[in-house]
Length: 134
Image (cartoon, rainbow, N blue to C red; front, top):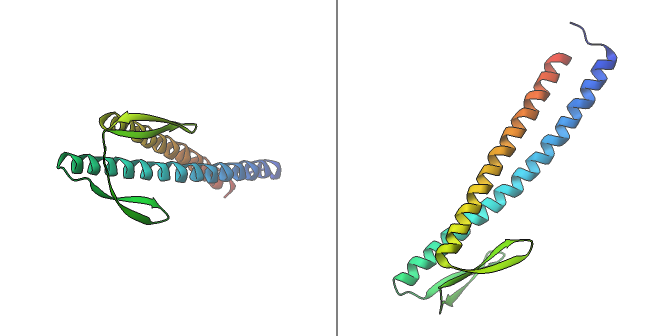
């Protein structure tokens, strides 16, 4: 079945819109994956510090940014300050902070899955347009 020139132009415009949507979704996915990696890092660090504190160790290496670390002695590891969004921070005990981060990680993983599903739908629609145009 031949496609009219008008239909072909409409399909090309639709295809380009799908391309923009795919690019936007890929950007969102990258941001969510970065946040997920930071969440994983926080969980690992807090867990390691909790274990160290339980073993009587109070020394640690603390990241200060840009790949730099300092040796530090932790005097009290009973509380963790957690960012809960919109710039708000709440002090939580260690176990509650870990539970909060695990829940956040689960939500982020769900977001990645949803973004992947949306991405797959857009790519499927793009392939359908490609096959119609060919």
